[in-house]
Length: 201
Image 1 (cartoon, one colour):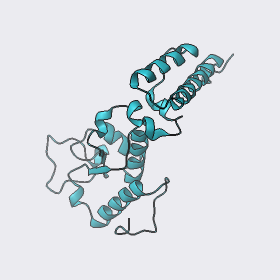
Image 2: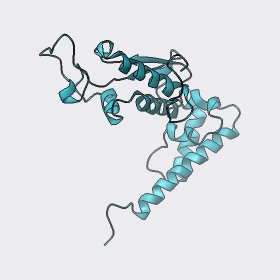
Image 3: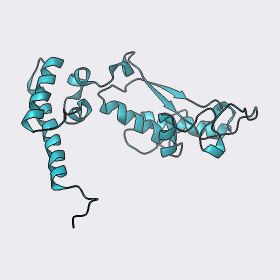
Image 4: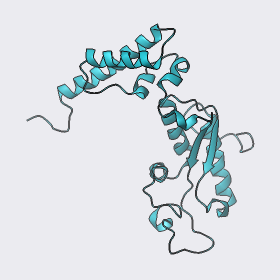
């Protein structure tokens, strides 16, 4: 009896065909010096038919196979409104911390709920923060990777630290948190630049 947890040959073939279609689309786009969104849409439809796909390849998957990404970024960009101002806005969340003013009845979250105060834990930003144990380095690198995969330029970033208790946290934690934020924005790999000071970062 076949192990149901393993992908079938059909599923593997569909995945291979999808990747082949994305590569084909990318190569066709690169052959054209002057191309419009309408041209790209036709190339995508033709490739989908050629490889007998049940769905059209997504723009972010096609972008992954383009060498000269900058030339086609605007044409293939997903959710262009995210960087319409030319700036990527990234929200980063510190660990849960008790409110110095006491507990308000209507305010959700808190240390016992493993969420910053006023957050329920079901928000995308909170779930991502929990995934990385509220480590700002992991949160920011993950968001940068995602936004770039959608075709956006992350050269300019506005960083927003969410959670109203951050100013009341110990200064050492605040400094380390901000240092890791700068590390995530400035390093070229997935490791923190531990040798640099906050001022140097």
